[in-house]
Length: 349
Ligand SMILES: CC(=O)NCCS(=O)(=O)O
Image (tube, rainbow, N blue to C red):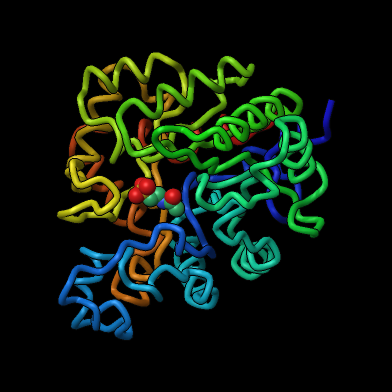
């Protein structure tokens, strides 16, 4: 039985699950997102390179992926440290940092942030979406990919001795590419060996989450220990959502704080507001899924930091929890979503 069994693995080592406290299960503290750059609309070219300033904030909120510097969250370690101190003050305990290979994972920085702030940080193993896969990654067999993921959890990643405590976010697009499929199969095989939590970034299509679960299941994954991220921009029809929920994964609404008119990665999508997200949570609870819900902000660009006028990592604790309570979600259910469900998910079997 691996030493991780019954514990949670943070960047500072193993902890007891009860030490986690309130946990955001899908955040980034340092990463780059140039792989998702969206060309700027004609006429807006000067805005794409202008310094981030209050007078451009609305434009940036509507066009976050067209501003080059906005995609470099890795330049903001000091601001993130301040935010994490505030997160702890607001009652936060832990953060799952979902940055995987392809979007500039920085484990030494995560370890330092955990030391400096007292927030438990759990790092992610594995690979982001196909466009970030190197030629070397693409050529790897499922066995080789499995070995790498296992070693990132058991020994440390990126040449460090800092160990990952979840697999993911594992990136997939739509349709799922051959290379992404191999990574999903390797994820399932590694999870079978390790008994560890898994988290998935699905493609931007309502069929994508179900197809990922099918591939994982066929490869032997434990779906009950797997999180499907970004459901806020992926499955909108409530019956379809219930069909997906029956598959047994955790259901993650992790774009709290993101309110934009045109979602540039899929213009057919109407990005919900935070109020609409809370309505979906209430619906899932009513349908009996309170043990399966997780929430987060998935901060992955600069403009969402308070330093730049954004909502920051405390938004859920400070603003969304009161809204949930005002919409009939009980304190007990809030605690399940923020404490108990993350704890169950993050504890190694
Ligand atoms: C870092 C990351 O993958 N965020 C997800 C952004 S998306 O718009 O929900 O795909």
